[in-house]
Length: 321
Image (cartoon, rainbow, N blue to C red):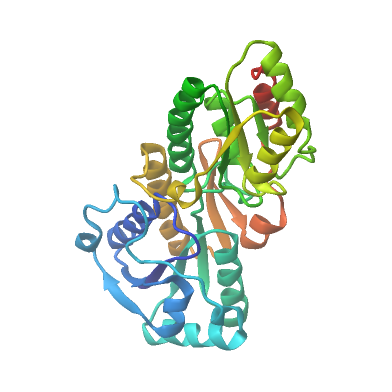
């Protein structure tokens, strides 16, 4: 294998640049050239590509976002779009492709491999931490720290005004961010997509808190919980008559300088992805389980559900008294 490609796809995640850097430098170490593909699969379809060397990725490990840019691509959902992308790979003499992204990106990589025989390795880059086959995904640690910093600030205001704050964090299909933030932020309650908990249950939580003398509360809600933070706030208002404030953190959780854990994870997985291609491995995601590099077939990363930690959920409930 003499030349490989690398792209970032889907939502950006802090640490993607560290992964791109690792791919470029690991490939250079093995005597390979690297082609950077801009704007994900849309860029591959359009042929928006250029060679990358070690100096092109200098001073990027600390940067958020992605220097390769990212975009959603409707045309890549079609066989014709993927065929055009495969043609560009052949024109550039690219022997293998590293795809950094989430489950949608891995779907695109899987079909490219199945339809055109392209060797692909997936690197998990998504703040939601919802991919099966790895303990953590690139960007997750930073997203949790960003959300937690916001919750800490909101708690100061909640305590000063004796109010209830309902804070919505990212996690459309998974509650990993919400659960970690709830435990680390000392929240009184947390609502997750994985838990079929009626929104009215928050009324009992608030009433019990008031009985115990709590003048303020923090409620964490994952965006994937039905109705989100607004539904939880409405239930509190109608059930207790108490005033609430809603804070939806949104895309602020995607940006910012990646924390050390994300930089290290991204560096390790990027290097392992290149080594896997060099060893003729394809059609898998490279992850880290219990500190060990592990490979999972791309189809399993989205077909098998990654569960939240039941122990941590129990801990959140126990400590909310």
